[in-house]
Image (cartoon, rainbow, N blue to C red; front, side):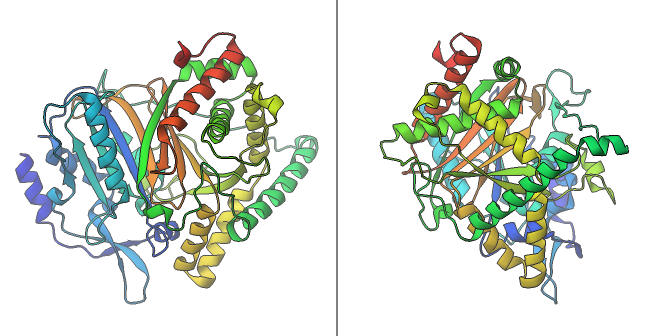
Length: 480
């Protein structure tokens, strides 16, 4: 059956040019940038790859026409997605490692393989995705499936939402996966409510102007200093990376959140700030207190916080259409005094202060309008160069997604772990986070040979344990 379905896909005629490529899609697939997303699914059982072609034909390809399309230019130079014939075997990679090694050895082979495919460019002559099946047992999994998707096809919300929509629940495949939802704040429309909110509106106006001005400076004039988390090497996006992960219990994070009267994002951001601080202390390089260390935080700009089905995203005038709909904000990693170092909760409080301030700002939307203005005046290539400079001038990118609350299953393979990584960005450090089945996995994409990934992972575990102990009065899980 799989062979029959594969032949049907291969014999499909080349289609006409369909929808135009979005502006952001053009930025991410340009002479200045080529950005992709790696989604890693860790299997609980050894992987049987026999259903692969059937799953791709009947489940994956129907998600969206872009998975069967390439990016082409018309006679006027405008880019469109065009349906093409597909040879599925060109997209499926099953690496061969030495046989009968211990899981720790396969961990090394896996890391080297992921580093290799992170550096490789997806061929423009075929649809911009690949799937890699790792059929060797590692320390944390019996095997893994890596899906590499070009960022021009959509943002993390679209791509991961699409993948989740075709994955089953492990406990009951007939039930849909569920996701944590974030309630929308209620907005008062009466005159009295408007009057009461005048101070908040004024604060938002000030924060918007301040954040937008800071963003302009960082993108054009002010570059972060060279530090243990930023090599400042030209062309760093073409250098090998190491991807490591740290996993925390969401229940433990929620305990700290409740104890401190904070949010989950406050706690997570505080852990990131503190771990970066610890790493720069332990990395053996002297870092002045005045060093500029800025993170670029990617934000979903959709007006909803819940994933939608692929059908809903593809409908005309959809509330949350498929594509790239996100913005970015510059957030300075706070400098902390010697006194603050002994009070790790200060990092959470500082994170809370920063996040609350950023929420009262519309700078992310102004930045989006600025990019659109540059595109209309100078074209997508110049806009892509502006985004490249924005990334290059900062120290790290932070991105997060919400995953399912239940365990997933892919072709009857229970998934024990999930994480993702954005690759091809001109930075030495990328931090991504995704919640899944009661856990939060933080993935660290680090410049190989410059950042010590093991030390950084250890600092992140130590940061969480120290914050947890300070908040709860008992050791964290990594300390036991």
